[in-house]
Picture 1 (tube, rainbow, N blue to C red):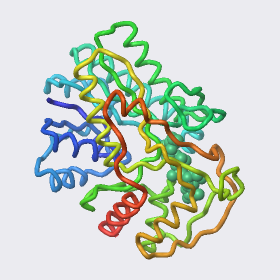
Picture 2: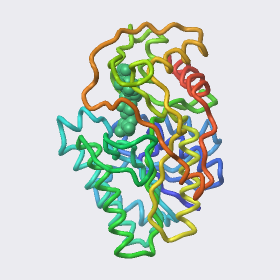
Picture 3: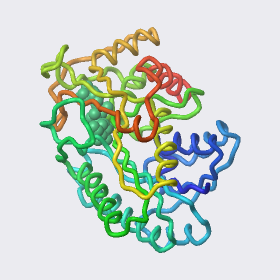
Length: 332
Ligand code: UFG
C-alpha cells in the first residue's frame, strides 16, 4: 500500500515509517522539518535499506500539499505532523491553532477531494481530564488545560464529525501515553531541539554529560514515593500500534479511538533508578517545585487496542532505558 506519513521525520513518525517499510508498504513522507532533521531520512534508509520519498512541505500550504496528492495515489494517511510543546502552546496559542488545526483541515480537505478516506491520527493522553479514575479508558472524561491539548481534542472531534457526515471513512485516533526509547538498532531516536522538556532525553543528556543535573518536578505528589507517575511506552511498540490501526482502517469504515500505553505506571524515581541500573551511570538530581499542569499519575487501560487491533506493548522499562541510552551514545 502507498502510505503518506505526515511528520514522518519526527520521533514517532520516523519509527512508524520504519515499521511501515519493513512491513512492505511504500512510504511517502511529508514534513516541514520544523522540529526534526533531514538526516532522519538517511537513518530510515540505513535501517530498512529503502530510500523513502520525501516532500519538504508545510501542511498549512494547501497548494503544496495538494501537489503531493496529485503526484501520488495514496491508499491511506498516517497524520503525525504538528507542534507539540505544552508550555509554548500556552505562550503562543495561535501557532498551535495555525499548524495543528489549519494543517489538519487542509489535509482532510485534500484527502476528501482525492478520495483518500483512510486515516490514522496521532492524538495524545493529554486529552483526558485530571479528575478521572485510573487507569484511563477511552470513555474516561475528556478535558484539556492547554492549547496544545485543545488542538488534539478538537482534531479528534473534527474526525468524528467527518465520519458521521460521511461514514465511508475509516479513521483511528491513537492516544499516546509517554513514548520514550529509540530504535533497538541504536540508529534512530529523538533529537530534541534545545534543552529537553521531556524526562527521558533529559536523563540521557545528563548521563552523557551534556547537562549537569536532572530536576525532579515535585516529590510531594500523592503517589507511593511522591514523584509523578507516567505510562512510558517504547517508541517501537507505539509504531507497531500504527501499523495495526492502519490495517483496521484499511478494511473497515469506522471512527475509533485507542489508548496506546503499557498499562503500567512508573514514578520519576523508579525511572531514574532503572536507568542507573541498566547503564551503570548515576543520574544526579535535585528536587524542585511541581511543574505547572502536571498530574500526579497517568496510565492507560489499553484493553480496547488489544481486543480490536491485537496490539499490546511488548517492551519494558528496561528495554526503553537501554535503547534510549544506545541512541544518546550514538549521537553524543
Ligand atoms: N519530569 C521531571 N523532570 C523533567 C521532566 C519531567 O521530573 O525534567 C517529570 C514530570 O513532572 C512527569 C514525568 O517526569 O512526572 C514525565 O514528564 P514528561 O515531560 O516526560 O512527559 P509528560 O507526561 O509531561 O507529557 C507527555 C508528552 C505530552 C503529552 C503528555 C500526555 O510530552 O506531549 O505526555 O499525557 F501531552
